[in-house]
Image 1 (cartoon, rainbow, N blue to C red):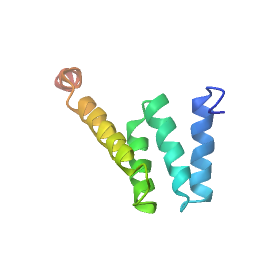
Image 2 (cartoon, rainbow, N blue to C red):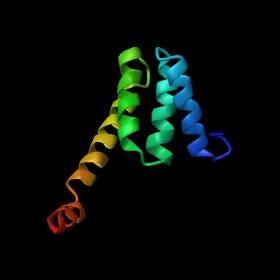
Image 3 (spheres, one colour):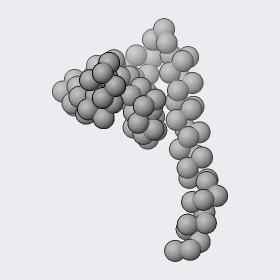
Length: 92
């Protein structure tokens, strides 16, 4: 599904892989990647990138994954700290 650009379906399949194989670092990475890069679901991406590094702390791509974690953190902070969100909260 991922290669066909069907990212929603791919994310569900990757999620199933994580449920069935919670100790599979690559399943966590795949779910994190599709969530962050294609679905803008930074909360899921952050959780599963962190799990990937927990399971595979000396992975050769660890520096890149740490960068992805930082990107997800910044994206989530931008939403929380958004002036638009603040305006909406003031109205409520």
